[in-house]
Length: 270
Image 1 (tube, one colour):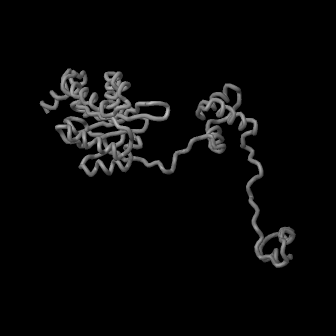
Image 2 (spheres, rainbow, N blue to C red):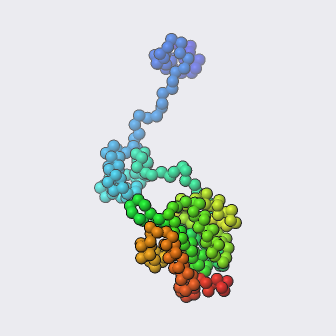
Image 3 (cartoon, rainbow, N blue to C red):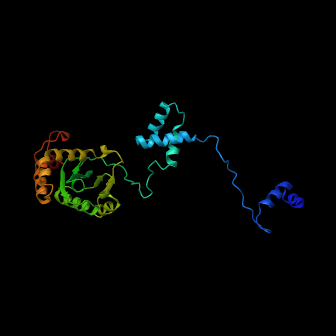
């Protein structure tokens, strides 16, 4: 035993402990035990961990709010410890690995009609479970708008809506901007690109990026509030009402954003 210890450069008592740990007579491998400490001196007390979890479940607020509440209770703990505890306990919603980051590129300046067109959808609820949708689109330069009601929502229907709007418009769409809705997914991007039109997404949680179409959504819902409620179960009739309203919106309604002109007048001068 001493010769073995001298050969490998350890104490004889170490070799003796290794021999006792071995369960077989001629064992060649002795598993190495973990050298990690059994307890960590900087670990949070169990009572603090329980309080963090309790506040999170009661308030359903973020780590910053939980941390502020702990400080009010004279419990000294760092914000990073609160965040780490919430992650370890599975109380934080992590980013899905299936989410894709959309590289949209620079936002073009709408100096002429068609350079930047914004599109969106409006949800109209029939009851707690069922709803219809109104696809909307507006040109940022001329404020020319188009809309159509649909019973379903998909990337294919969104592309058909863009095609219908393009046929109706007197100018070519160069860039279509949308939010990150499921109907404007990567599949929609490919479909739009087949038309020779660029598709870009606005920034996440930045509705101001789509401000023109968001304002148009509000306007059409206010002006057609009665018609939408009355004909929401009859889409052909509702679409006829929308077409009649769009004729007024594009040809007669004065818009403050384009110096009290109509979209038709702006298109004539461009």
